Length: 50
Image 1 (cartoon, one colour):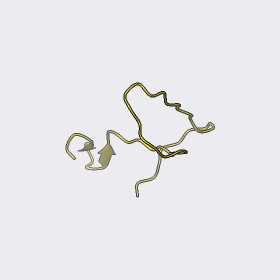
Image 2: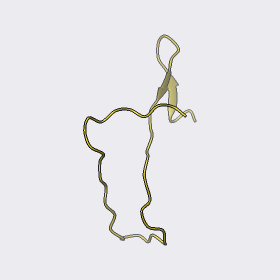
Image 3: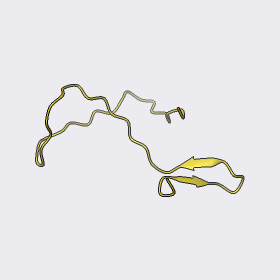
């Protein structure tokens, strides 16, 4: 957790990393398999903590 969370000077939590993905087809993924990354429509905004 120390690698992905920190605190700013006021003590507020800072998240250093995060990834969200949607899987559209299940199955085995092997090294070398192609993948596609599709960004959502702009404007992009940060995700809310859950």
